[in-house]
Every structure is written in C-alpha cells, then in structure tokens.
Image (tube, rainbow, N blue to C red; front, top):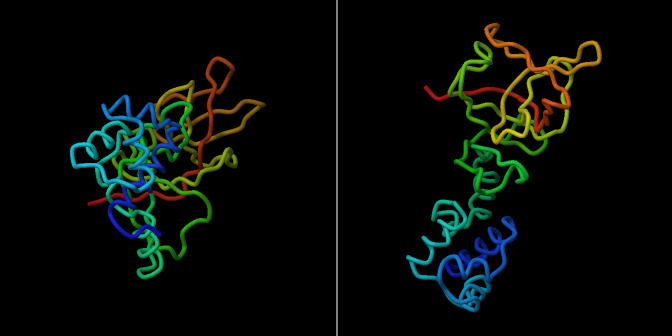
Length: 210
C-alpha cells in the first residue's frame, strides 16, 4: 500500500503507463522532460511539480485526481467499512481499447455491495429514446461485462465498429440475430457481415438521479 503522495503518484503513473501501453520515452517526449525524470517519478524517487502533474493528466486524458489519489485504498475502505461499491461510469468506448480503460472513465456511482450481481460491472449513461419507456434517456444502465446474452435480454452492443455502445434487446429469429428497440418508432437492426455487432455486456438494472 502506498504511504505518501510521492508513492501515490508513482503508483498511479505506472498504472496509467501500463494501461495505455506507453514507454517512459514516449511520455517524456510528449510532456517535455527527460526520460530519466519520468523514470524517477515512476520509481518514487522524485515527485513531479504541480505543472508536470497536470501535463501527465492531460497526456493520459484523466483528471489530475487520478494521479493524486490512492484509489485502491479509497475503494477498499468504502467497500469494507460502509458496505458500498464504487462502479465506474463509462463514456465512449473506443474501438480496440479495453472497456474499462481510463480514457473511457467519466466518474463513479456508489451502490450497496449486498445484492450486486457478480462479475465485472460498469455503468453506461443512456442517450436518446430508443429504449423508452424501459430505459429513459439520461438514466444509468448497470452493465455486467459478458460476450453474449439470452434471447430477449437487453445488451450493451457496439454496432458496425462504432465508437459508442448502444443498448438494445437481442432477439434470435430464423437464424438471424436482431437488435430491437423498445420504442416502436425505431426499426430493428439485423446483424449481418455488412452490419457486424459485438456484445460487451448485459444490462442488469437501470437507475437515474432526480
């Protein structure tokens, strides 16, 4: 467990570097410092100044708190002492990137740990009315990461190499797979070689803020 700010920054810098598959030299060149300086930061030998921390945050596309906070310790304390779990809210899911990559993270929602589905969970904030009235626009859909769903279940799906996940009901019929909107004004999407789709998870529940 990291103990002070220098170690916290070192830990988070290494985590972000490995998550984004970046070398020390790539980071150094992008933010205008030497490779040895980045190495010293990542090894906890030196602490970057405030301006350098901001440059690192901008480089990785994360808020500065992503480098300054001991997130492992924070999440552990919340889960154990308060019985709640922080679940990430994801924005655009970039093609080829892991679903839970830092650049997709828009924040967290807390849920009571008891009763949560098992597995890797994340939230998607919905936009549009294609799944109304089941899923209102602007609500949060809790997704469990999995590559397939049962017939009639709602899935988070990336269609035709798009950058963003859509929520649709999956229907198998006559050898075809269709993505159905609950709003009848939207036509079904039929999955073909010309319109491929990839299921990234199953919608488990929906919540929204008043």
